[in-house]
Structure formats: C-alpha cells, structure tokens
Length: 122
Image (tube, rainbow, N blue to C red; front, side, top):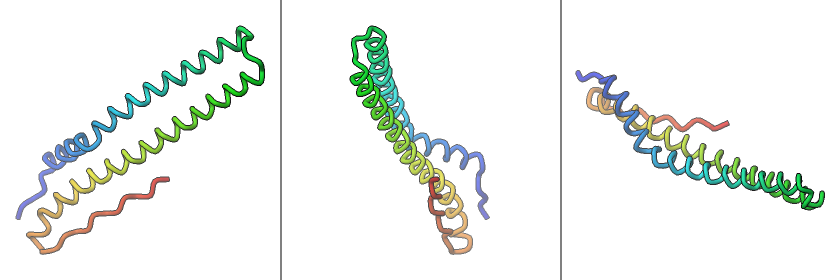
C-alpha cells in the first residue's frame, strides 16, 4: 500500500502556496509602499504648513481629517487584501494536503475524504 511522502507533501505545500500568493504579495507590497509614501507626504505637508502658520486652525483640522480618512481607507484595504490572501493560502494548503491524502485513501478504501471548510476569520 502506498504511503504519504512527507518530504514531497511539505515541498508541494510550499510550492503551491508560493505559486498561489507570491504575485499577490508583491502587488500588495508595491501598493503599500505607494500609499505609505503618499500618507507620509501628506503628513509632511500638513506639518510644514502648520509650523509655518500658513494654515488656519480650521484648514489644518480639515487636512488632518482628510489624512485620517486616507489612513483609515489604506488600513481597510490592507485588511481586505490580507483576508483575500488568507483565503487563497487556505485553499492552496488544504487542497494540497487533502489531495495527497485522497490520492492514497480513495484507491485503497474507495472513499474520498471531504476537504474542510475555511475557518471563520475573526
């Protein structure tokens, strides 16, 4: 009876995971770099204009509110991308593992074990 090759499965898990999310991670990092630079530039401008007394208190508060909103939007986007990455990672890993198990179990005993559902993200 065939056995599960642990080294091969571990390698397959990493290979499939890398293939599934590598491009996404690179895209997310590039996005995060652009956004963090834009936020830093906005913060620097507000700081300089406030320090030079070029902004009224009302204008300063408006620009700070805009910066806070931009920060929130950026954070929400990163969180959403992280959830999508988790889903892709889960699907890649669980399909690789259960696929390997079922490749041995199905011919041996005639059943296919069900793939677990993705856990709830909290």
